[in-house]
Image (spheres, rainbow, N blue to C red):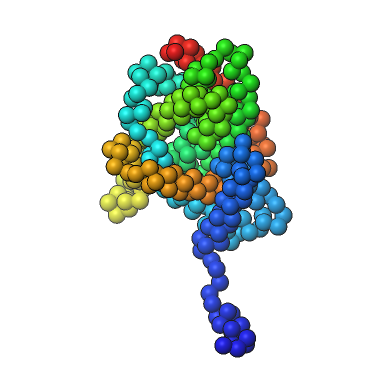
Length: 363
């Protein structure tokens, strides 16, 4: 084939479009996050992915690409790849390990999650934060950081801007915990086991928990991961509860619209769109998450398969978080930055304080 024929064939190929440019950019972001983690092991891959996504959205050379041709693929990564990552997250959990913590620790985790979620949600609404930001920040702090925000946002149908801002805040505070909490172990009089449980009950993301707890040794790391995974178990009922709330809200809105239509002489059966949507009580990805927990509990999967699934889960979440980070618009965040930072600080005090008290009572 001559050079002229090759050039003509290249011109005849369809341009790269759809989700492909955004997915390729997300893959490049994941590779860069892995490189950052290799150079600075204290920085988890997922944290690096969020920061790199935010940077890509504001660099002059990449900004037009992120906001233009790459936007569909990046948005898809932030939603669908997040769901797949959450499904695989279930393979990190075994009911036997969680129950082995003892009922006192389980009760402590439930109390920490309930207090953090309700307290953060109340404070966020009092501060007047827009959209679903109070709900999403409350979810991220109380359950498992960005993964929980992604899951609840899917059920609630949250705006991408609210999701991105919440992920950025939770990621920032979780990263700060890696440096701050180890400095408090000795002043707070915590042994390695107690320190591990405190970290597991109060730090957001699983990777951040590992990075923080490993400073206390192997015993602290084991306790931290087990307590953290107990919090992750609560993701499923929280998402199910959110889906029920959305169904009720949609039904009330549908009834109101249908009533207005009847007054105007419309037949509701001829316009089903006005009766409101009915999202499933248990979304498919949450059902998959629960199924993976059951599969892990059976013990049928070899260690190699679990390792590969864990690697895939981290890559999927990194791509999703890069996509979410690229949706952060700093000028918009600045307008609510003070209130958002105050919410993050207040929620951090609540989760750290309640979990510290819980550890003292149960150990």
